[in-house]
Length: 514
Image (tube, rainbow, N blue to C red):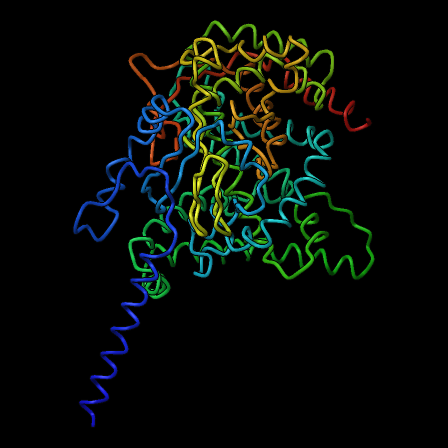
């Protein structure tokens, strides 16, 4: 009898496995050509991924130079992905059947595992809370936050770049990450936390730490990942970062809630207050702030690094930039109108972003249902898609597209028809530095202003140059494209404060009164 039961169990399991196999073979598959398929008897994607891991940019450019309007597929670090040509960006840009949040958080990170709570908060309701806060508060208060932005930048630049008037080297990325973290924190969380070293350390490091831990867990089958996380020191350290963040954020909120209950009338204008106001359900305030750090700090830092590398390699652009900054500040002081009028600086930043965006392919989406595009490309439910960024370096779109030209978008803005399109914060299929469509970066206006203010101080208060024989080499990892993390820039403090320091104190009142 026991042998009979055992045999029945074996037969049952066999039928289940066979049924699953048949279901897998019969389910609809994406139909774009796969460029790095598994070979016979390969049971993992490791070799296929390694084949394109460091050459994705070249693979994309080679394919789309031969087939400009034809999608293709790759087995990448997060699984199979269909990459569309830029000509198809408009077709998918606002499609509600395609989710950016599920692709960028749920697929890439392990939101049910301790330590990844920031990505869980980011994934809630397609990031509705975060989008509401950025659209309804941050973007509408840009003029009022230019003052604290300039003040904190003045202090932070001096602290991180120093006062040494002799030439010395600074590790560019490692210097700018804490600087951007501090300045962003001043706006998001106020003056106290932007000087809190523990918070700055957590906010600056969480993004890279979480990416490393996520990659570590992806080596294991999904059913085992939670157990692995309990035994992994790296996972435990990540969870500790989140706990430490809560220990800093939660007491501040509790104090504010007590004040509100006592009707003390204290008014706060920071993201802690904004999230409290718009949250329609229970949420994790500290995890939400960490998610905000993940999506803002390192992309802003990358653009700053690239722009500084580019202007150091093109010193002829420095004096015109300095002249523009001085003249506009004399006329306007520190406000958003001044930042808008810095057209050459805006052009320089957009040009650096054009030649080296943070991704080789953007507009990452996950299909929520089976989708067939107009050209017949089939995207099954659960499959990821993206759009290649190679058009940003296309000679048919940009003259001398492979050359850096700081005046490129400045000239375009002189033509009234291109005034809006040529601005740093504007997006199109030809320039997707901040994404494109429904899920375009909602914080890009603040990011553009923040980068400009930092660049203004660095341009007027410091000389800079590329060390002899040094050539920065961007780091490419699948579709990710980051500035050289090892590059060092030579800088020296100028002998006088120049205009910005005086203006940051003498004309700030002009803005606060407006």
